[in-house]
Image 1: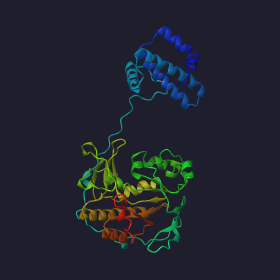
Image 2: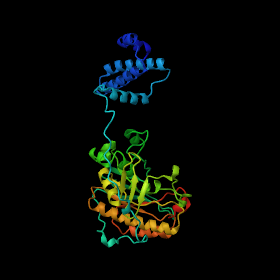
Image 3: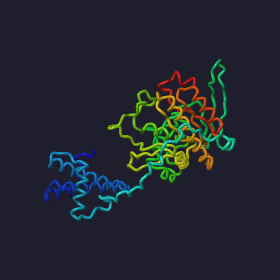
Image 4: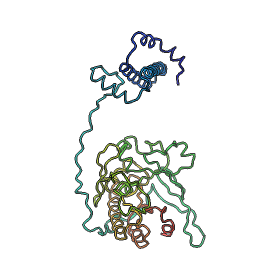
Length: 390
């Protein structure tokens, strides 16, 4: 905060102007807006001396505004002043942005009819024979260092070697949803022992967008992160952003019931899903192919194929259909990935809820495909006792 003595010393011209002209409420608003824009320009130009003088003048103007009106100056008044300045024909300052920016171009309408369920929800995914056999990667490998000798235990200690470093397993993987850990910078993350970091493809797709991240050189340079990064497919959002149903009573990860049951998931089907962006309202198509393309632009070390996360407690028939849909989506994702690996590894995701037979079907099918590793889909939170054996 700037002291009153500094304000008095720094603004004799402002005081003389106030004494002689006694500006009214509207004029004070205009002067405050102009001073605010001038301060931003001074700070952007690195002129700390001029910035201090402008700040003192700005604070003085706000004090005079409060003394005159009995209320604190609000940003809403700034917007009103800009409109009034535009209406009066006053020339905006060089630093002042256009008060009436051009509207975003109208987006082409998405044909939701393309996103319909498969004619046969139990359709089998493509066979392993339609894929090339798995081959070792010179940029990615896993080694087991120690296996538990305890009877009945399958615990192990290992290392995952990636283009951006080694991951000692098992390890804790913090989530940086939009490419940053909340309240923790890169240095603090390293000091805390972070080896592998997780980022959400859907949220980065919405904002700032994969082109921005790719333009910065990928997630590692965008985030200034040195270690390995894993990105998801966006499949969880197919589940979490949809409308609530009768199956959501005891789901694994409870989603919030939105007012009026409004959801940003517009449609889902064999092709993929369509969302309404929570950032700017545009429609976004998320298909197995587009999910992989986005993760290619993000340039993470480990990527995930598009899958569906069903709610816990759904009927076995619907769960089985969901497993089959995830298998078909993952097969399409894998084809897109193998066409251009870019030194990225892809993990298949085993599904089936807490149904042992469906888990076995999922594991056995995915194990025949040339994935580089495997993840376990679903959450052990609600059914920990049932999930661990699976």
